[in-house]
Length: 246
Ligand code: SF4
Image (cartoon, rainbow, N blue to C red; front, side):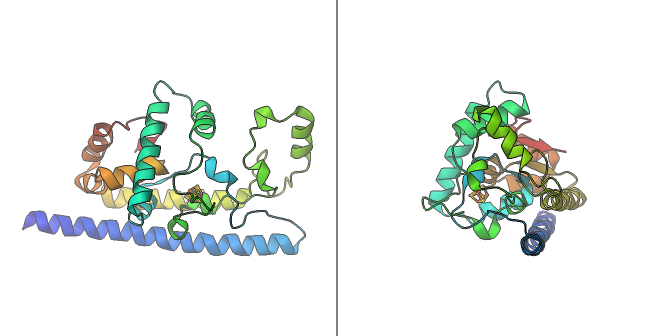
């Protein structure tokens, strides 16, 4: 009986987190749209749109609740794709300890996000994370997929010189205020998770989704921080570049 009550309280905490995620995603969506409208009215240009997917080769990191929302919306094919992604990434990062190396390897070796469809759409669009929603490009999409180490210096200089420095997160071409807003919402989500669970969990989207789907990470989180850490380690994903429990 006591255990049942505890489980019910736990489910309520999960629901509360998922509700917050939904509200935050709706809020950010509206903010992004109105910001883009205003920017365009003032003569600025943004280039994100349907079928545009070059940013989907970046490593996406999210809070636990956002990943759980994605995990609960996957079909079997997507589940297999995310498992394969997570295992490949885990193996790729053996011996890697620096963030720039992780980001470079991810882009070079992992290809596109496991949720990107063959048609180039986001396969989890209604529940895609805040970090995807807040990444808005002020340059053509070819720049979102560019490996700047390979771009000739003169072209790189011309790219940087043409950036709208009032709005971008310099030297990137993504809109700063929208990224900052996404980060603030993520921080608020982490704070709520700490209040409800006593800890927060943040990390690679595909890895978190895989752990939620195949290793019942949500149940472990309900049990407590030690159980969550044990679940992650037991599945072999206890790598500081992939996941952080704080
Ligand atoms: S979740 Fe969707 S928008 Fe985000 S990287 Fe993956 S495919 Fe792209």
